[in-house]
Length: 191
Length: 115
Image 1: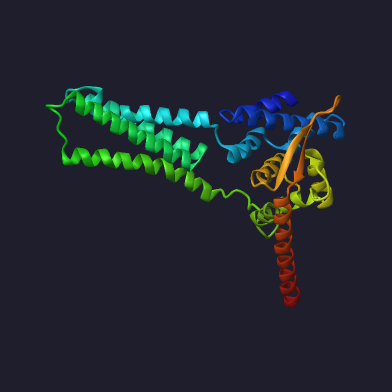
Image 2 (image 1 turned 30 degrees about the vertical axis):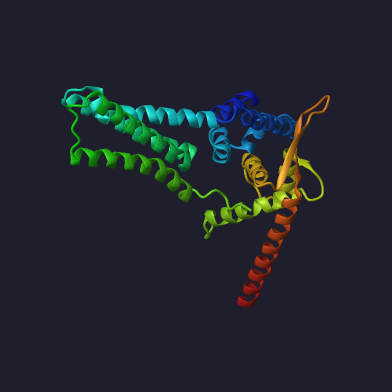
């Protein structure tokens, strides 16, 4: 059997990264509800928490409504931007070798995963913005690489094409999963 | 096993629960547990939803500007968050009831005619 505090802690965990005022208000309201529920049912804690529902899905419903706080979203964008810089292969090592390409492709893969996660968890708008920051980071990385090897830097048509393709994919991957999620699990018809 | 899908019933509930929540607030402000209890009792158990889904539904109404809320902290006892319908909420409720009545009457006429 789960105590009221343990139940609320689980909800709280599901609300991580939400605006702290909103999160405290939600928890205070649920605590208030449980107090009323307990005095109505003669102190049966598990009946009261069962009636509220599984803490993880309760938290998920609030997340759908409130998303992440603006400071968390800024953090997501910053990380997406930094990883974006690292996705430019020439930056990792000046000399041509297989390894930097390999390393940058790991960062490209991580950026994809991160963008999908943001898109699903924080919504397609946040995902798209993070994608934009990833693209900006990539542009900045390319800019630095060009500036550092001014004489020897060579941009081929294929290289540019691949560069732009990955940029486009960042935007795509930031936008689509969140949009798809919205479409698949329509929130209850709203007034 | 019932013949009709659970989704259909769930959609009907989802589509009408906010209307009911708003309607419960027309005469006086109420706190969450009270709203939940009245919804369950007045609906004859039709809205047997998890209570944890009703609070976010109330907050969605608040985000839309249909209700507003404030905390009441008694000297002793449980602090409670009260919800109150706004003017916008009253207009929305009136419109929604109108739609609801037309749907119910229309459906009823079709069902009666087909009997």
